[in-house]
Length: 270
Image (cartoon, rainbow, N blue to C red):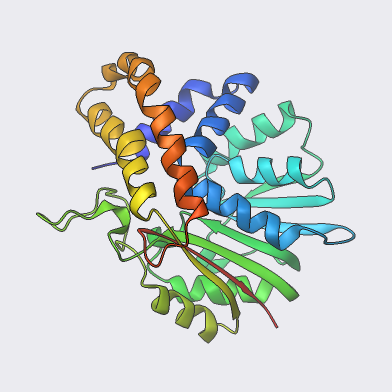
């Protein structure tokens, strides 16, 4: 299953339009449980920090986390990088429309050869590391650009069915991933080898979150991959699905999951 092409179609539909893009971001934050966990982690790391705060959004994609962080924390300046220039151009346009272009900057950058110099107070990596083979090079680069005491937040699928690997075929639901997911011990060990100290490990998409994922993301994506004309049916589908997904996501976030298909690790540079 190719996930990015469907996502890109929706991104293209709102490209260059301020309010549709804001709505698109709001829907991404609502539907994707990882966004709930990531925003919680960002708030925990940045809460109470004094003075100017620099954040590197490493693999910004559409730029929704750069936008949310800059809006939520007025002292934050975000440098957002991605390997895809078209994503960055879309994000730049929206940032200008939102009046945040003095606080969010963008550049094309390869995380395995990171050019951004820092020092940063926080490096954020969401839904990125499962796409990169040379992950330890990336972690070493994150360590290099962080100031002492700075934090890194890594959010990625876990190996407990991350990317929604099927029991039948063992193939990833997300065709663009180079690995199906990380074992928590594997990810923390690699971060420690880079020099980090682990602060928190949490699992998302436990019992309740996995159910919300199937209802609100997987089934609609499967329909859209068959034909994008199914988009006209989505509003009717979500009238029923959205309230259920919201309740299930809330239950997941409030639970202490011992395992799950999503993994968030927070660490710091000593």
